[in-house]
Length: 281
Image 1 (cartoon, rainbow, N blue to C red):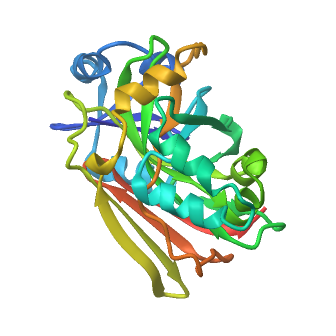
Image 2 (cartoon, one colour):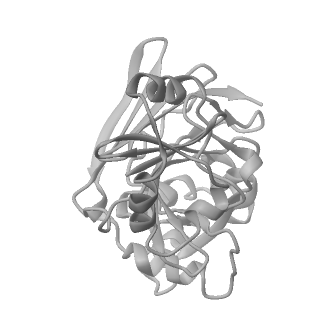
């Protein structure tokens, strides 16, 4: 099932059609056995014509977030470790990323409050004081307040590699700023955990020309998704639940940097495509 948050309310896409769910977003999603709850709700909810539903999604879509915080896990794929070591070579911090990749404890960091999150079709930002910027496509977990993974969405962890590479302590500035995160287009709620062979793909286009295109299966991740969620919830309470970006394995070459007007498309099997345009704030 898929939940779309729109300006006209929440839209549920089930196997047999679309339904309008009249319920506060945070109350709706923050529960155990969310799939079963949505399945039951669809039996009594107002049916929405497919044409009308697609118009909502095309014209009224919001990012699938209410009052949840967005967090992120870093260096969870080998390719991500290589990229971080490359960017930190001159500053002498390359060993940090090798150590965290092989450590027992994962790297977790705060990414965004809801008002800084862009949705599908909206703009994401690059910093004006950064010389090297990239998108990072990531499978993103929705974890309820009790620490259980209930759904998934597509995430874009926008990053300044020049600022992070200058000094590892600059990570918050490299990662946390207005519209440095995007989520969407929906919250995917399957009956069973997501298939490890699920593919995540990214394409970056500039003036109609493809600048980067690649894909990878999420089973390349080093740590189980449940382990990442468990570490996040060890000493943090999230009364509305939270979103956790799980790291990237798709990294453009070191000579590529984003520019205003670039278009980023991130697609994850079963979830959909998150499309964003790049700009300065």
